[in-house]
Image (cartoon, rainbow, N blue to C red; front, side):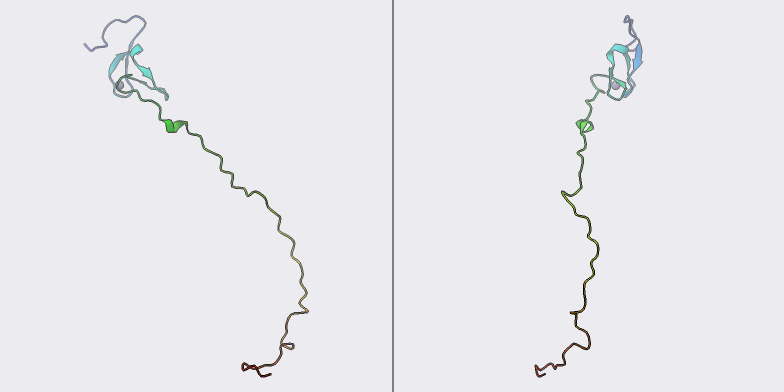
Amino acid sequence: MGKADFLARGQWNAFCDRCGEKRKSGDLKKTWDGYYVCPESCWEVRHPQDFLRGVKDDQSVPWTRPEQADQEVSNSSWATPTTVPDGTFDNSL
Ligand SMILES: [Zn+2]
C-alpha cells in the first residue's frame, strides 16, 4: 500500500509527471506548461527569462538624402599632353 492508497472523496490517484510518485489528484500542482507535479519537490517557478520581451532594434538612420544624378564636368581646363609645359627636374625651363 502506497501513501496515496486511501479514500479521498472527489479525488483520484495520479502520478507526478516529473518524478512519477503516486499522489492524490488534489496534491499535485499544475505547472505553467501543463504538467502535474509534486508541490514540495518537483514544482518550480517559471524562469524569469521566459517573461523577457525583445526590444525592437530600429536600425534606420535619422535622415537620408537620395543620391544625386551624375553631373557632366567640363574637361576644357584639364592639362593635356600638348599643354604640359616642358621642363626639367633642376628647375631650369
Ligand atoms: Zn514529483
